Amino acid sequence: MRKTYPTDLTDQEWELIKAFVASKYQEGKSGREPTVNKRDVVNAIFYVLQSGCSWRMLPHDFPQWESVYWYFKQWKENGITKKLHDFLREQVRKKVGKKPDPTVGIADSQS
Image 1 (cartoon, rainbow, N blue to C red):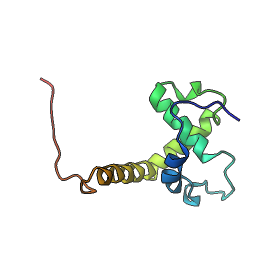
Image 2: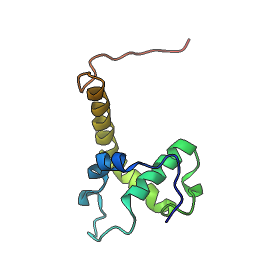
Image 3: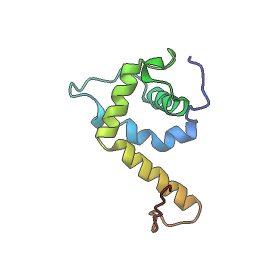
């Protein structure tokens, strides 16, 4: 069992997003079963994003950095990260009583 980190998903959070990342659609073209746990991959991505460490400095109790980066890149290229972002934004907006899609945008610049 690996060490837990503050950036790890809770069981409830994982249940909310696992359908986005656990799909067979994202597997390699060989069609073989993945050898890494997708939840561990997502936790590793969150660790990198929150800590600011490079992919190569990912702690050894996560999947290999090459695998984690491969999934991150695939999900980004396939639009999975955008779909997940949009879904989570809608969930937050609904929870606070707003319409699912924002209706106003604000642009600001530094002078």
